[in-house]
Length: 257
Image 1 (cartoon, rainbow, N blue to C red):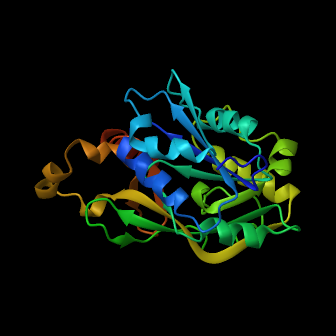
Image 2 (cartoon, helix red, strand yellow):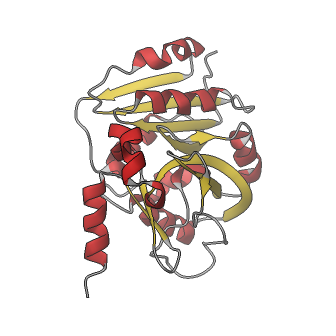
């Protein structure tokens, strides 16, 4: 069913994870809220993707945009998605993350006519144990206070008024990391925001404490495909998209005196 003027535009970024993409898209089309369009940004995949979601192309509200190169400045790629969006509101999902079935309905209801930005909580699922692991996302009304350096808002748990994004210029295109944190800080200076105490998305993580020599072989090459989560002694979690070697380098650099 083609929706000429959708209420919500969903921007989904994907790179070389066809099974994860299908899982994410399945959760989108299982939503109880239906007035949306889906814009999939193929960020330089080396794999043939459309066949894993072929059945959804008949829905009429899906656009699949393929880019030849893998853009490492993610904010630039997301801004390209924003330029294509027709919805009044914008949401985001990443491949292999999923939404609860009422997530869009909840976010749409909460943002209403008076708010510009709403965010909720996320559930982190360990890819090996399939169990929930702790995270620091959306446990407090983060926007109440000064500019923040840690990022307790996950991009898959937000809904943003498109007019606001246009007004503040979207994501930074000069940051490889913290492009979302940079946007949140600018949003909170310009808009009316709200935190909701509801699980919006489920994100797949690689909890280092569950990865041992004995089970590493079971994971195989999939280990490097997921965000790695390391827990510090103060329980603040950090996540890093990449392989374990780079993640260890990150830890070592932060531990330098």
